[in-house]
Length: 281
Ligand code: C2E
Ligand code: MG
Ligand code: MG
Ligand code: MG
Image (cartoon, rainbow, N blue to C red):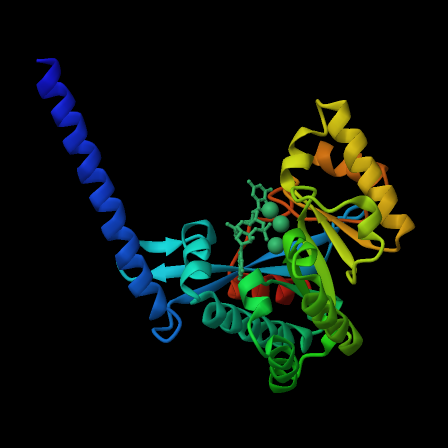
């Protein structure tokens, strides 16, 4: 009996493994055609001034409208697209679409209160040849000013192969584009190194914010990051704010900006457009 059980468990395991492999293979192929097939979508999440909750910016977040599986979040395909290289095409689409949309909003009365659009850039996309030129070209084509663009990169990108990456970061900043370190605190950058990094903004990862109400050590850590950022003349955005208590504590320690479900989930460009219209006078 034990033997049959073992066998069926093994079978089931094999079946599952097979299914997972097929799904991955199928995803790889489908991903390669997702951009040309017009299946990528953007959502936008407001970034607010914490003391007043006024919206100051938007983060663009990609989705994949899979023909069969429906709307997929980035956690279901970004890693794979980095592996296969399709992230380069996806990333250029995101950059163009985000700037095109943002430039449209800026032409409206209330839209002019939005200072910038934040765009996530994966390491592989950043390192692909011609990235800086591409940014310059897309800005020109969409009529967006460099100041309207904030590029979100990861700590690990700044830490590894520093030479070329730092040179490109400096070139982007010289153009007027700003740089943020996304998910700050989850990587391994030393605080002393931070003072030399060619960046403008730190986004404190949600995992730190989650704990600040009941973990005094996390609270102290976030407080330290906020003070340090102020010393280094970096702006700070706290990610994943879900409660007004989070907002109050963060505003109290002088954290200038935040983002999270408390203010809004990511929504469509149309919803933002309607909201801007309703807030114009
Ligand atoms: P991220 O850049 O750190 O974006 C924040 C993520 O947290 C988003 O998830 C957002 O929807 C979610 N979030 C925001 N506020 C809250 C909150 O209060 N509570 C909770 N539970 N979640 C919140 P999303 O859209 O699923 O994106 C996940 C990650 O995928 C992003 O993390 C980013 O690293 C990556 N990503 C998204 N769009 C792009 C893109 O266009 N290119 C690249 N390379 N990566 C992207
Ligand atoms: Mg981000
Ligand atoms: Mg983040
Ligand atoms: Mg995050």
